Length: 226
Image (cartoon, helix red, strand yellow):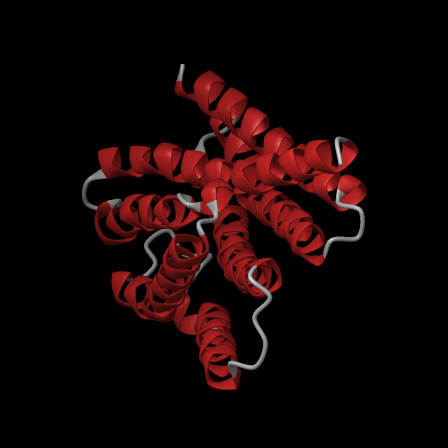
């Protein structure tokens, strides 16, 4: 039952984010924010596929233990592409609210992303091990959590200050994704049931992508009536 549910859920998830992303790239009429948003969604889908596809194969065949190394490498790739996802979301923020300058802020965002990616690439993570060290799971997620916090603050403040109704809850989708992700990092090895939080975490990412898609569609409709 788990194999069937997870496989169907992951298939729907990957298909949804990829379709949303490709649609935004194709129909965004050259708007930088929607081009970035589309690339962001495609990056998320492609990156997660490196972990979710092998996991579905493992559940439907020999079990997770037989795919330990492949799943570990997939997790590493997913961790990196999730970081790129937030870099692109930062670009969306700058494009949507016409932000210029802010060199220190940009340096902080890219600095946290680089530190996160470097930490993910270090062999200390033991990605292909059946029991990777929890300590490194924490280390590599500290800059990631700080990056997410910055994104939350930026979108919360900008949407409120400009009265940007379509993006008013984007900050919440990021908060929800981290609220579900952090317990998984900390406790999934000792309390496997905590892993179920990846479902609402995934839904939060779909919500993030849907916000951009709906905003684009609304602006396209408005332009046709002008």
